[in-house]
Image (cartoon, rainbow, N blue to C red):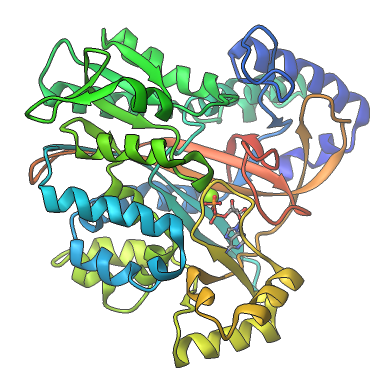
Length: 474
Ligand code: ADP
Ligand code: MG
């Protein structure tokens, strides 16, 4: 906890009053989500969960995370263009992981036909935790890069003002003035708008590809409205709609019921449950098209856990980004220990180490969206079971990051107000646009701080575990 909050965090009356102010302020500011009971309706909504107090973040680590974002944009973009690297890296994974294998099949099929797409748009979010060393100093450690459907760039812009108000109510007016403004949605929209412009058809629309159940619709609306403000027409469709209404013309321009689509912005499509046969066909249609996909399937594959693990091998970054030693040093400085579980001696050794000392590691399958990783005793049991089977290669191992917990209150609709020991995860949004071989935009677009109680090992805001937060730099 920021030392500054130590006096207020135990003052029950002050906390109750501040929490009431905070919830109303969040609702007023539009920090909203649809409810679990009525996930299809916007006429009954509630506030997206958030912390009562902003959380302390070491200024140096915050700045380090921003400073390395353009490097990570470059890296993801380079991986997405490197067929040999993706092929080699994912070779063992696609033998055992059907979902990655199906994505990879589409990737190869699209390459074989030849890409119609000439403009590329990346929107990613690099996530970090602050690892607490034995001497008490914190280090920035990357958890992962999300290359598809990185969310909360809209809602997070609402929390800084709410926290500013809370601090004032608690008599911390000076501290309130130090909170940073933050609006990733604007940066994301800038990238989408640039891609739309380079696509070069005034009549064409931007298509948000959305889930069947859209509880987080307001987050997406923030980006959408920024595009409407630029007079760019936005439509929202599901995979099912693409299957029913989508078509390509002779030059592989994408049409939805006769309307040309310039940019497809995926907020869906990263979990196996999304895809039945028809939705896979829809995905293939989109990937074959000339439309700018954000991300294209190569960039989605660049965000797999297996790729992340390979990046940490000595020499890999040098091969991917020749002539960029400073960028490589900045990125490598954020890496945690990552280990391959591929068949062979190296994998045998690390599997045995993890079984003997599971609390040092996290076991990760090739999945996104939270709640898939294994920890502690469960990690040990699963690894024990699969250690001699090829199934092992569908996972990677990662050093467990151990941040210093801080006290805070997690404000959630229908939940009692109680103090929790919490840890935070910082995400930096990155946006880039490439036309052919020329990178025309490469930026950090803002940040997201998410905080959860320490009893939850895994899971984000959408998974109902973490809540929105604001960094208070110390
Ligand atoms: P997902 O793609 O499901 O979001 P992540 O790799 O981001 O997968 O992991 C999900 C959550 O698990 C993270 O938000 C973080 O809270 C926790 N986590 C992941 N890796 C680690 C790690 N190495 N150490 C500690 N916690 C981790
Ligand atoms: Mg994650």
